[in-house]
Image (cartoon, rainbow, N blue to C red; front, top):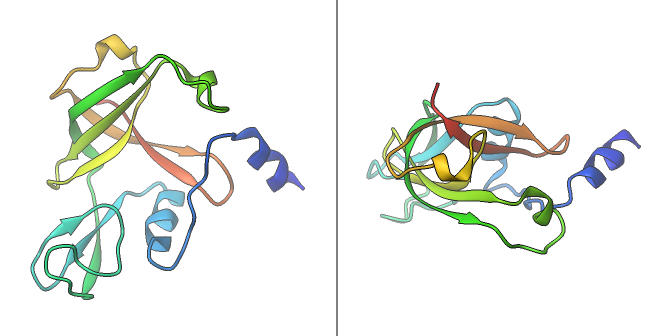
Amino acid sequence: MAEQTQAKKYSKPLPHLDEENRPWWEALQRHELYIQKCRKCGDVRYHPRALCTNCMSADTQWIKCSGRGKVYTFTTTYQNQAAGFRESLPYVMAYVELDEGLKMLTNVIDCQPDQVKIGMPVEVVYEDVTPEVTLAKFRPAR
């Protein structure tokens, strides 16, 4: 019953967990940020996939990230009437370039939208939205 109550409080869409992405979501639940790395060609990737997007190998390992990066690009949303989103206005969607070299689509939080700048150093923060789902978001580095 408590899980249903908590899930109802979060009104944005939730991800579908499957065998391909489960290690990603389990790491986030532990408040750890992991990405996939191909053992064959060394390519790193985000979003989790069964096959390397560079060489199509299935030989993948999970590597822990520092959780640090910089804003690569961003946009601020001032209008969105969808349930869950309108309550968060304005919000910043950004591609953060992780120190490990890949870009991740996320939100920048804990600062005013006009303070977000390209190249701004950021660090990961974790938002536990349901008992099963934790989201990785970023804030200005401290």
